[in-house]
Length: 61
Image (cartoon, rainbow, N blue to C red; front, side):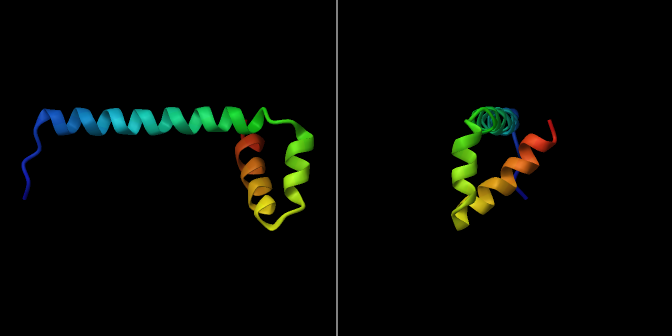
């Protein structure tokens, strides 16, 4: 079994923090998009997935 040193732990902690930060940033960018832009995306199949994400993200605010 690999022995972890403090550097590995700090790298992991930084990575987790950074990914949470990026997710929050993406959420804010996404939810602040115009409603028209989101409505247009709903029409396409991939837009359906985006609309679903929109409801999950923005509905829980």
